[in-house]
Image 1 (spheres, rainbow over the protein chains, first blue to last red):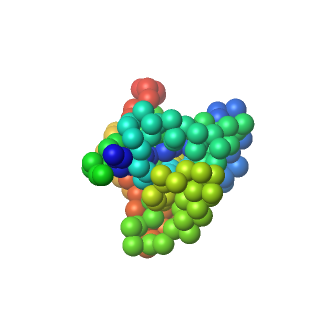
Image 2: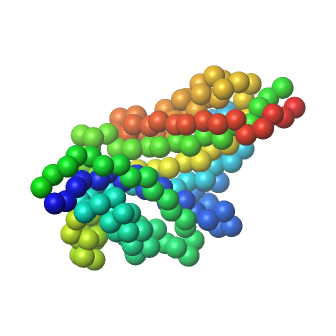
Length: 89
Length: 89
């Protein structure tokens, strides 16, 4: 029996890595008049649905997916939250 | 006196909008052997620090920034969470 899970994955650049896109957005916001902006960092937000035997199994799979494809471990960190959707056969 | 806030902004494609990048990632994961993946949607995750008079002021500014620059309201939804960092003069 497998269960369905919905994961929310956040992939962010490591703090030591420059984020030119974030700098560009911060600059754009200031040009639009938002002088109060102090810093912007841009990452990815991934919603992923999968089936797994258990929550632990889903987390193991997600860790491997993030390391292999979703994030670049050299320059990015990731974290995820997971919730069960509904039981299914 | 202004206060510093840290906002976490999530920009996602509206459910009715096709997400070719998400489809490509789902296909890539399946080719890597993750047959359990059922769907992937990719959005943006933005960390933004700003100064504002109050939390309400910060939320007003963030709403306008999202509408003007950070999200495309035609095809994207956004939501954000906000936390005060520290009081400053």
